[in-house]
Length: 526
Ligand SMILES: Nc1nc2c(ncn2[C@@H]2O[C@H](COP(=O)(O)OP(=O)(O)OP(=O)(O)O)[C@@H](O)[C@H]2O)c(=O)[nH]1
Image 1: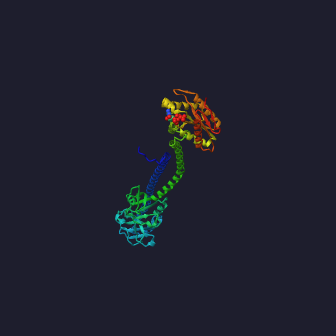
Image 2 (image 1 turned 120 degrees about the horizontal axis):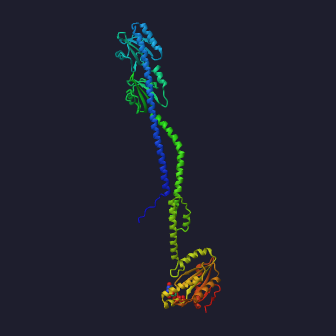
């Protein structure tokens, strides 16, 4: 099977990363959508506000101009009755000027455009020619575009033609509005100054600025500006566009039909962006604590979900450890999948440990007799030498076992070995360890035993074997050597001693026990 590298990510990291990532994306998305909606709304509101504002100002300007025309029409009617009376014309010009603040100067010209009366008189305009020829040619009520007057001021000229009773054109009565000076138009516009970076300006049909909150801009020509184009089309609407100075603007526009002028009310997009940034910051401040709480909650619940799985996975890698079953049982399982996994693992632990136990038993026992083998004896001694004060060692060897084999065959020999093992079990305590260490050699280890107690057991075993008639073989005997290990002794020396005592028992005629200290053999069974 091809070996794959061990994955470095664990479930907890995957789960938490995914959950936190999803939450963060959802939060960011919500914030982004809110931001977009808010932006759209602010833009639409600004556009609609400017459109409505431009329409309102246009209507007001239209009202001012039409009332100026009305006043001049009235003056025209008065002077037409006696146009040759210069005194009358002068009085009427003064009256029109002083009536209110509508005009900065009032002129009356004859049909050639020569000024025949004017106010204020200090300007001394009488006898000079009218700069703008258009009103003379058109012979209609007219609001001009801006132009430079005789005195060099930038003005617009509002005029009414003067006809006699026969309909003959006599000249005109007109009022000049100086764009840089206070007049009703200026007063109206100044009254309507706007907040939040928004402002209004007025252009004539030739794109010249007639009013602007920044006086520097008055008289300037605005070419190539979509917003001005829209205003001069005389429609009322709104537009998001870049102005001539390269600033993105949210503009409303409206036309003034009597003069073909246009009004623009506009607000830099940057102001909306700024409002938006402030709102976004407020929203973020509101969202962040709640968002953090949510993320903490996800972190906590993610940990709770993944914790049992992590612990189960960790335990799955160490099923062979003896305390596995208890450790896995202690893992809390709150949901079905973890419960199923725990149950499966517990089952695996039981099966595995049962199998390990079986293998251990097989590895540590003698297959013929079922007694412990040398390895098991070593393992037991490793533990006992640490914890026991004494261990009695009884070495057992069957007498003339070769004869059994030779006489009855190997199988009967094996059966005899099994019978001797059975008798050894019968004559020992559960705490004793019975081992087969060679062909027909056995060792009994008796923990916490005295030499006398060990001799008793050895003797009982000898008698038991000698008195038992085995099938096919009949009676056999064993010889035994008994030695005692005390804490601090060398175990190898004690085994050697037990073997020497056994050898002595053989030499002394077999079927007897020879123990240390007394060094006396208990006599053979008679
Ligand atoms: N059937 C059988 N015989 C075995 C086994 N292991 C060893 N033997 C035999 O046990 C016999 C041991 O014989 P010896 O060591 O000469 O000693 P003995 O005949 O018992 O004589 P003494 O020990 O001096 O009383 C040999 O014939 C071995 O072949 C076994 O597993 N099964």
